[in-house]
Length: 66
Image 1 (cartoon, helix red, strand yellow):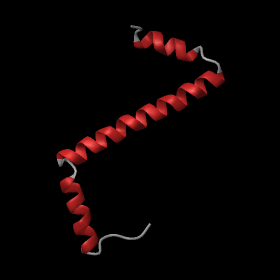
Image 2 (cartoon, rainbow, N blue to C red; image 1 turned 180 degrees about the vertical axis):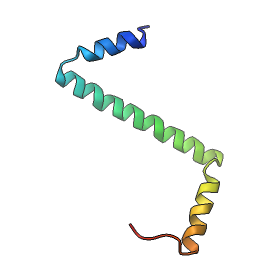
Image 3 (cartoon, rainbow, N blue to C red; image 1 turned 90 degrees about the vertical axis):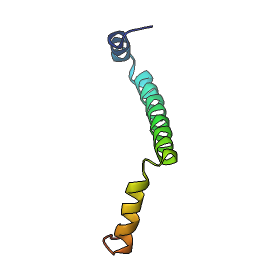
């Protein structure tokens, strides 16, 4: 397996089109990983306290429309 340094050098050598393709792919990969982490946290109850606080704030009129 290539080292991070090797990968960085290879990325720096990409053409602008190849770099754009890599960037798009990486953004999709990163977003999918973030979505999975968020879903895992939601299923585990890790976000329950945050949700309850938001609901409480809303009910007490401490929110405004965006």
